[in-house]
Length: 154
Image 1: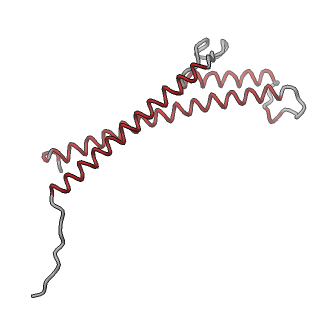
Image 2 (image 1 turned 45 degrees about the vertical axis):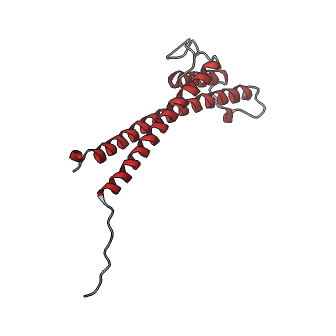
Image 3 (image 1 turned 60 degrees about the vertical axis):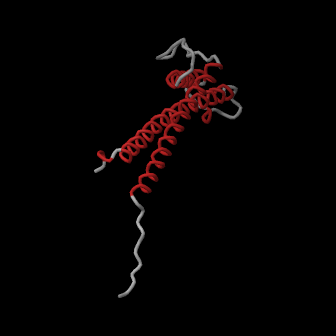
């Protein structure tokens, strides 16, 4: 007889324990991601509110409201673009001559719009982080339930 090496297989208890730890880590990761998204959303909202920017009276939406969210920031950026084009005769910064005194107006408008658009992007990324965090948390919870309840296994 020849001795054949036998492969050692992890027992079910060890595998279940490892999967339970992985499930808990996945849930914690989802919770951290969601919490980070919520923190970022309110942090951006707070800082925008502190600037006391008001949506222009001639804006299509949210006129007179404080800019403190993605929709008001986006609307104010659009309104600034409209004001810029009115002031420069429809020309953008790049289209104005180097010595044109309106170039500073166009440049300032561009900087303001870029800042507002950056906040809109920050709101979007934070909302995505919350959504993904919730999905990851749910995946971890389902994995945990399957590991701890044998009747749920396929």
